[in-house]
Length: 619
Ligand SMILES: [Zn+2]
Ligand SMILES: [Zn+2]
Picture 1 (cartoon, rainbow, N blue to C red):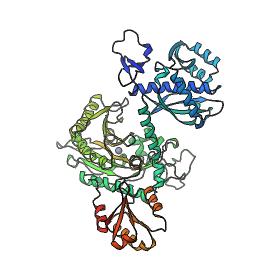
Picture 2 (picture 1 turned 120 degrees about the vertical axis):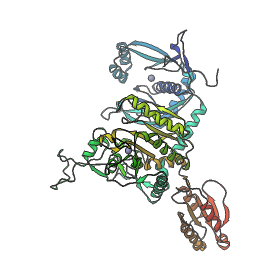
Picture 3 (picture 1 turned 135 degrees about the vertical axis):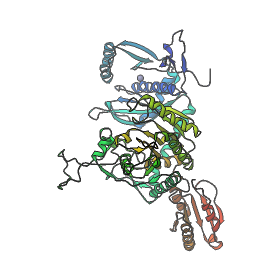
């Protein structure tokens, strides 16, 4: 037996099935282990069954409903006589361990749907009856283990003894079928892994994620706040705005180097723009629109001209940029034309999806559009790839994974054109030395794109930069240029963002770094802490010296104990704590304490300045 443990299922003809369904002769069968994505899914669903079995044995009168596998785990929704609380979890877990140890065989039984309905009716499982009534199949499968059973498609592990490393993580209320007019159910979340080590590592990451939650750190570091007066819209406080502006400045340096010109474009446009761009038909639900005056619901505008009516706040910059392109007659000599825009965007995200900075209704992207001739696509894509090269390492991310998102089912243009352009994107990545994978069918309807996936310290992958080819918008807005041969042709538009939404990026960066940002981004780079009142002048002098040299520094001169001041500076994630007492004042030295470990050490005042000056800046 390998160290992968026992197989949990098998793949036959591309389908994952129970091991018990293998016959003597299964050509091409592949055993599935719990350390593979498919295997861990089987294991987690079986763990959900084990939990339901434990719950029903501990809490008689509880009905089962559904229990699917989700990312990183599973849940099961129950209808118990009294709702569960987190206090119930240890008891349920203990019972699950007992049932796992008993190593019940997991059996699959098929029966007529009518028969199954009768059986679950007799058991008082009304939700299962409702589910069965909604199924079209005449035959259904039931999974049984140790006298307990559930309606289920499977597959499952061969016996409950395969379930060895699991944890119930939380309890929540959930409406039956997600509809608030229905009964409130009790949902229990849990997770399960093929080995104890894998489970432990996952639980550690969960704990770390809680400790690093950017909403919590943002409060502690004084970066931003939210208020119900504008849901999903952050108020960046001075320190948060510093991080924000530093990122913008960094990207601006890249713009200068790579030939992008920045523009500033309108915030609101007449709805005819959105009709023309296609947003009206495809994105209107996510837009903030002024009253159109026809609905009769909102008469915001009583002026005779009606100039306040029929506007939409931009959710994207692209349609506006086509007007800049079209403002002059363009020839092949003008191309590529690259324009960048830090314009504020608004998107009406549903309130249930809002989450701190990572899902907001107002955002700014490091957004740019390159207009080029079709034969320039390869070189233009390559330039954008080179531009992004140093960004993520400079921000402390170790690796990037690349995907080329290809032709989706709903698409414009022929398959031949798509394959040709997908190849251009892939080749550009290869030429720049990047391995990449295909993300099948995930391109935008108007063209393929390169996606950058950046793993963070919590092993989550964020899709950040994107480079998208677009043949549609130039067509919709009738963009043209004159070729070298004097013929009119249509340019291609490339949409490109590096960090993406700055709001979301800052949220990701805070969680990735735990708030310990690279020195050049730290909102407060040094804080001078005075030990006694007698050294106030000296402490203030140092802070002034650092500020004069261009650093973001402050002095904490309060009459508080040093330990207290240090803790506060640590909470604010200030990289350099500069402690001064009477001895330091007399010798014109400082005691330097770093946020990132290391013991404190004494240095001359000039050395402190040199130390800060030596901190790396991104290229
Ligand atoms: Zn099931
Ligand atoms: Zn765009």
